[in-house]
Amino acid sequence: NVSSFDTDWHHVAVTYDGSIARMYIDGVLDASAGKAISVATSNKQLLIGLGYGGREYGKPEARLNGQLDELRLSTIARTEFTTTPYANQPQTISLAANARPSGVQQWDTLSDTQLAGGGTVTYRLSNDGGVSWLYWDGADWSVSSDLAQANTTAVVTANFAALPINFNGLRWQAIMSGNGFEQVALDGVSAEATSDTTQPSVNPTTISAYTSNGGSQFNAGEWTNGASPYFTWDNGVDAGSGVYGYCVYLGSDNSADPTTTKGILGVSPVDGGGHCPFVVAANELDLAVAGMLGSPLVSDTNSYYLILRTIDRAGNTTASSTQFDFRFDNTEPNNPGFITAPSGYINTKDVEMTWEVSGGSAATDDHSGVIGLQYRIGPSGTW
Image 1 (cartoon, rainbow, N blue to C red):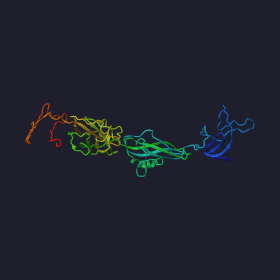
Image 2 (cartoon, rainbow, N blue to C red; image 1 turned 180 degrees about the vertical axis):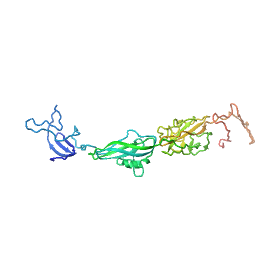
Image 3 (tube, rainbow, N blue to C red; image 1 turned 90 degrees about the vertical axis):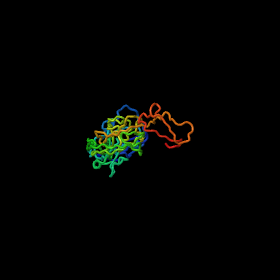
């Protein structure tokens, strides 16, 4: 319905549903005509932009005076089309793997190289392997719920140092937005960080132990019958990326390295990033919490050792360890084999009873040993 076009690209589509032929220009119906025809099956070539032309001399040639690009054929008579050469909805691209999961004190700058073609590129960041995405909301790094919640490289760089560091490293997501005629493209993305390769300067120095959380305290080298002891310690120090937590070992080896073994401990409550098999974030360990123990404490004459090392957010650990030793016994001792007491009735409160203190009938304990005997008078008496 127009005599001429401008020099821009346009989308042209022609459909036929068996009764009506329609022409669409840039997705809008331009013309239609009703015609019932039967398209014959032929082995002739399918010509696009070129026709067979007139068979007689002087008839015009069937050639398009222009250019064609991105041709598509469909087996149905469509009414909706992709009318622009490029996407007009945001497109995303991100790293296939996390960058620098260790050795980072803080992130400093994010920059990119955009190819000429228009459009905009914004970014979201992830420190959990792409499970969730973060953006700077003006005050903090917050979870982004849609692609509109994203930042320019300038905003990211200005607040990059505040991004929490962990052992998941960094993953960025570029959001490329154009109007459909803009070819938004990236030639490179660069994220720079300050490294931290220095081990923490201070290990915990004092470990306190309790029979349970809120229970009685016991000293190093002493016995306890609490099957779920509770431990606290003073804080480690790291002047670089900061203290991430503490590598922990619990077991019978007093020379164990908590960066390589966890002993009888269970599932690490926080990610150790491959630097330690068991890490706690706070300066406490409560073995009553489900999953903390992989194997229960067992009564033994040998000592258990709790061994600690400070680990920072860059994955560096102290070269030395702090340890606390204790012994555990929750197995009941064996009572004396018999007690000698007066037979029959007595008429006095002065009663003498005896039992063996040596030999096969004496009270025994295979672990912490017998410290004494307790007694009560009557079934409801006090021990």
